[in-house]
Length: 156
Image (cartoon, rainbow, N blue to C red):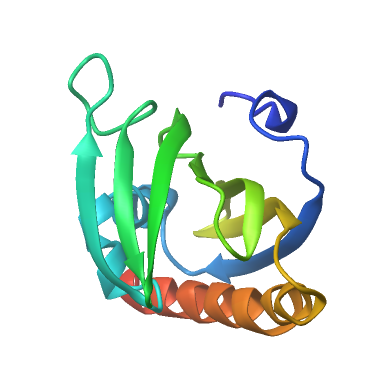
């Protein structure tokens, strides 16, 4: 398992972290979360994923870039950490609600299942209402629903 140095990619504080135990083996969970284009099947509000740039080896792993249509927003993301089957991290280019973003999916094998820990580091952006809505309502809601959907996709 590779260690992720968050400070290498952002100086933003940890804003949100959710976790969920999935009754599925780690390789099955990894199979779903690491498939960029399959994100639309479990991530709320992601309508389309375009792989825009492979890494220097021509792979869709660490160093690759993708665009995710998230509601009305187009998220420009880069995969900055790739550690099969233990997780990956991605950055999102600054946008109206967050800046200096890093998201990290960490998978931990536990007994017959997998603990998924999803952490979001960022500086809030925008007015105080947008900042509060993002941290307290929108992002937690999307994250919780995503992990619930992921659980359905990984049932063995």
